[in-house]
Length: 563
Image (tube, rainbow, N blue to C red):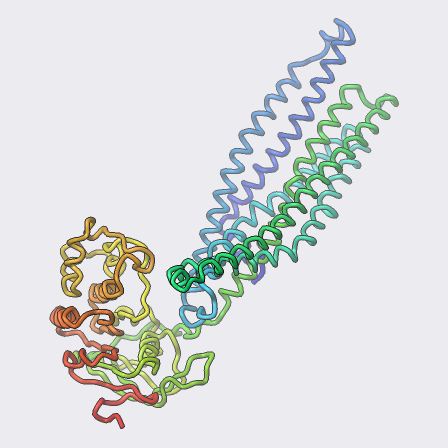
């Protein structure tokens, strides 16, 4: 998908605001031209009438051009304000549509297709690149369309007064559009592409640095990291200075071309005056009109650079969003689940997409509805990978998984989330309050219900002692909480969803034995009918379960059958 396809995709929904914005921009430019055009005639005509004597003064009608000057001055103010209001509103709406579209494309790719993309770079694409494409209309389309349309009108009006002045003005504006502005675009393209890559790398490095700042400080590597970021920043600044210098030079060249064109128009007008083809008052009228005409050419160098930025941004968005989801969406609506909600795995084999190392190899097991099953095994053998398969984050290569009597591949992750809640080992907590965090799982839960869930996970005492209670901020990634508190908050989210199935991945990691026991007792009492799959390497949780499965050598079997 290229830039024009991106823009066309969303401009169709904003066609009339876009056209209205362009019309207002053209009217504002024409009003500016008319203001200076008539001002030159008014001032020169009044001066000539004053010098010619009383009869000429009485014959000169000052009211007509003065009224025109006031009209164009007022029109310019009003249309410039309305143009900015309409075009920026359209641009913001376009950016909003684009971000929604980008999110809907990126969401199905997570997590499998986004593992190779750095978080800072992905954020840059979602924010900066959508901004660039969304501003393509205001920063590129309007300036060029206005310059072409208004340039033709300016040349036509000047040509009506004096044919050769119209030709000279058209030639000057054409030079500003083609060799100057397009030349800036061609010269800027390689640096803009490099700048986009450099900025994405810098933002990714900065995000990684901030996320791991504690580790860098502990290891004494913070200064080296800051120096590396400083070097990247200086590279960015050099590229930006080059691009700014190129744009400024082009603007200066346009000003110089405008002055040369104005000088040539004055010379042609003086010649026509001596030939009796023009009055003296029309000479400054043509000169000021020529100067005003080049106002529409001044934004063109920046518009060319904006076009290149938007094109590169569209390419980056397309690269991020055009990937095929690792798990294709079901072709038909999810079928109804049959009770009991049993999980059956037969001959399951799985390896990650970019690896041929088997994680599971012809694994088979069954979990009946209402059972509490522990899955144990050494770290790194694939216990958490099994969760990714059961929640449809990754596809399996061989075998069969049925859930509630239906093939698991008939369901999307969203479908399964209505029945299965997961408290993952590697979780994410958003920066907000405890209340906000819990309301992500159940927006309708009142404070009494929230406190009840927090008591179940042994966290209510901490919340009650906090100065702001449920409104306590937890920080980014739950930094204001201890590791055990953050994990229990994730458990509270899973319990709030009240689904028939609970998958708990290392639920008591980081807890002391007393808290672990109280938490498991409370959890099982709160959800006595839930089917629980508890993935752990801690043998202390096994007494709470009905039976135990062991993962070893890619196989899952009852603990007593482990060779």
